[in-house]
Amino acid sequence: MKTSLEIYPKVEKIVSNSDDPLLVSLFMAAVGNSIDTAVGLEADIVKIYKNFCR
Image (cartoon, rainbow, N blue to C red; front, side, top):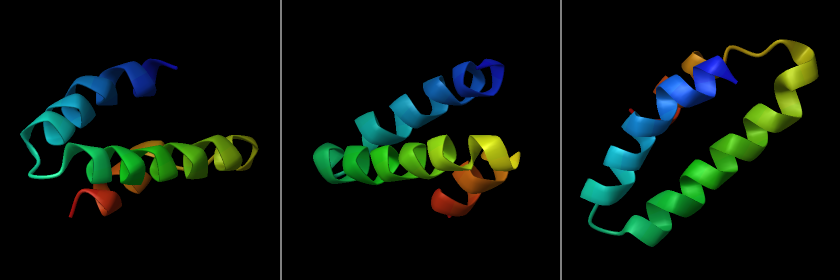
């Protein structure tokens, strides 16, 4: 939860500043779903987020 709270302001800024906030929100939701699925697998949430934001 701590990592999610740290990432949220950055994600919100990316979505707000994008040319297509709806599309970017959908991508972020997909990333979030991937993270949720990987919780039991001890996935690196920050790495997933950074890979998406490239």
